Image (cartoon, rainbow, N blue to C red; front, side, top):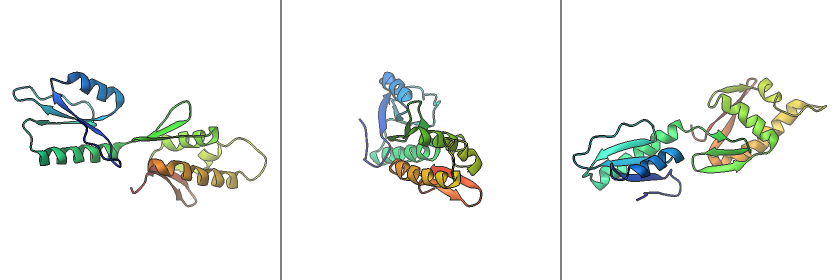
Length: 169
């Protein structure tokens, strides 16, 4: 069963150890997983912050709270991923980036949630004659619009650079 709401990360609720293969699938896919440990079964060893467990029988209210806590923990530690084809993924959403956007995001991701200097980002731009400072500003403005649906923001740290991070944090 999958308690899932459209604006939240999906969580698979898996009976343990009976559905051990489903847990393996969750681990491979990076899906949040709540293991309901059957009576008498040993507690599972958790190796991923995207997992948690409760012992059966469990009250529906306790299950709901455990799922909410698992989602909150996963959201706090979520980091965007940029693949080689230029697809930026964050939580359950993705967007395709242009080559220049890809280079800028790759640099911002190296210091996710921390300062990336303007000079480091300027090196990511294609070399052209003209005002590279204005070009960087324009690319950042466009990139902000592209990543907003993912729940990501680029903050300007005046006279220092930029910071990529989750919206609302």
